[in-house]
Image 1: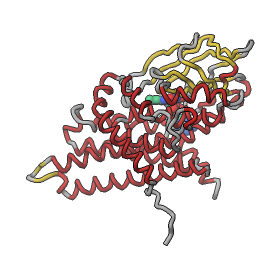
Image 2 (image 1 turned 30 degrees about the vertical axis):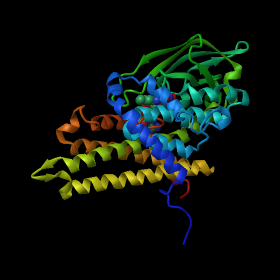
Image 3 (image 1 turned 135 degrees about the vertical axis):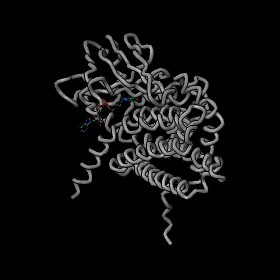
Image 4 (image 1 turned 180 degrees about the horizontal axis):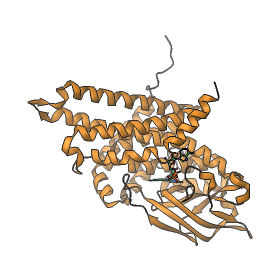
Length: 385
Ligand SMILES: Cc1cc2nc3c(=O)[nH]c(=O)nc-3n(C[C@H](O)[C@H](O)[C@H](O)COP(=O)(O)OP(=O)(O)OC[C@H]3O[C@@H](n4cnc5c(N)ncnc54)[C@H](O)[C@@H]3O)c2cc1C
């Protein structure tokens, strides 16, 4: 008999970690979810708690004060938290799969010593690539970095930046040479409060409303040359590679969201009675719940496989794109059906499914739209024919 574990068989430590995060999500996040969504505000005490629990520095090695976990652990955390609140899920996701990941791979020892302990204990990270005129075509960005002396001077605006309100450290992509196209793009570590750097408008959103999404404004903002992450002109590589990994996190967020919606729908179907019996005793209802559960399981397998490939150092580009494409579709369908299964109660804010339905839409948009995932997958699968 083969000893190779099944894709859903995770290790004892991973099971324990998942159970711990599940308990935290139920006990400490769920009671805050509705109020945070309503207020469009992440509870600062919750953010502090996430740091204390080690969930904001999952992959950071112990020597820098982190939890010394794997990428897979980060994925499990994002999934479990998102069953309860995808806004908190994306906070943890951007911190771990984009910001920390980028520093672990490209930071100098000095930069690691300076920032990783802070990211593990009290500093939220933010990842600033998109601009008003450059979304899917991210490398058409116009934020400019010039270097008249020792410092770089940043000028420009970033749009749609997650965690901006809470963040103390921003990974900002700017061009040092617009004529060089993507080869001018450079990544900078910019601290909140740096003169010349301010937050602009905070977006009023359809979903993940507790997650802050803001414009960043750079006006003659001086950033020391030692704050370049990686090499000047090589920021495009950092952007591409972190997003390739980060989108597995968004896929995990969507699997968690779908599972959360399914859990609510199944419980409701067992408890709500019509025509003299619980809804769950009608075959039409059972089949819907079965179909939803099957799609969630398929999405989870894609996500876990992509994360395992990433941890093992194998290629995962196609699998990550497929995971995000598929999981975001599943989340939208499952959350929509969950609203219907709740009937009128699904349409009001007294119950959690309407929020999950609103939250699901973002999965098809950020970290590469579904069309962009299809473009990546098409290129990779057709190249082999
Ligand atoms: C809530 C939220 C949080 C975000 N957080 C961050 C963040 O933290 N950091 C960050 O840098 N960015 C962030 N973003 C930005 C996000 O990544 C972009 O919105 C996304 O990449 C799409 O870019 P766009 O909005 O400019 O849409 P566009 O690129 O203008 O796309 C519009 C539509 O056109 C389609 N399209 C574009 N090009 C093609 C093509 N060649 N062929 C076919 N169809 C095409 C797209 O798929 C989409 O359907 C966030 C966005 C939101 C809404």
